[in-house]
Length: 138
Image (tube, rainbow, N blue to C red; front, side, top):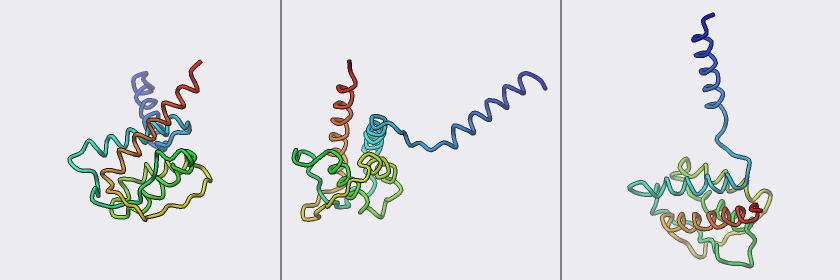
């Protein structure tokens, strides 16, 4: 077999392998980065998908709650978005994997528009990312 044909087949096989892998990362730092990036993508469009949908407000600044509890509440709030579920599924999946088995309760007493919720979530996950980065620094 010709060398260029072997190289082409190897490249095609590698490309097929890469495209078949799920985009989920395993590192918490990478998951936080993916969440932040996805929020930036959603906010960079003309309009946030389902931006007029109201979701339960999560008190990201409440220091009495653990980060896992807040991640759980954020996932629960986004799970309530049904009309644009596919747009938010990657966020929900990463949030759920970050909070693990933490169970949470979320009151829908205070609601917020999705277009306002996403920046709050983005700020929270960026803060968590920076905190992890400082812990990893020598």
